[in-house]
Length: 244
Image (cartoon, rainbow, N blue to C red; front, side, top):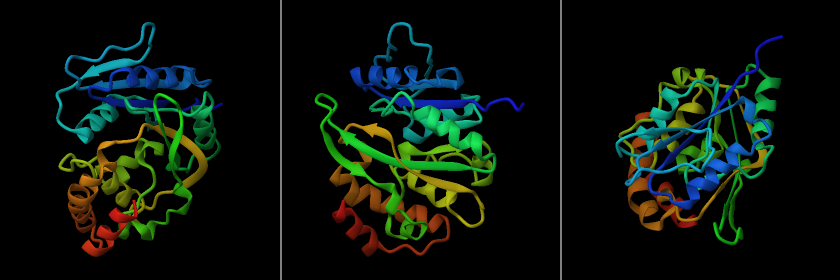
């Protein structure tokens, strides 16, 4: 019988406070915990502290940006499958990781999956918004749309086939640039959308703020599209920002 693949979950955090403890607990409570390696990549000041009894591995890094921290987590992880639950996020249920592993176990050719995401108030748990990735199609990348990045689970081999890890020159659109590479015909990857909520976020993340949508995000998405040989339209991206 083939050895079961392990899942590395990477949590990048910078001054997330009490939210980090919730993120760590949501991973520790998974029914598939015996197959999970959890790495917390911390650039907080003062340094973050994990909940008592946590088995997550804490890695201290200099604050060089989101994608530098994420890349460090990928490089230091050992699992064949990689996902993320960042310091302001959490897994929606105790069986989420088991469901993800079940999909990869069933299909060795499957390269990556993604799902849906909910924004919930961290205090009340009230649903604020739902990001339904089922409506995504790769052609929508040219309009600046991508699936919900925190719901991405990917086999390690994919990074080599898709041109490497995250581009650290991006401030907030490195995940969008990665989506372009993952869905490229040249990479030839096998993917699947899972019509389930795979991540819960608190509202107000860096890339969702209106100011960033109208300035940094548009500029960086133009850069990401052009870098990967796509025609880039400011008008399409600008309208997309107002849609959000």
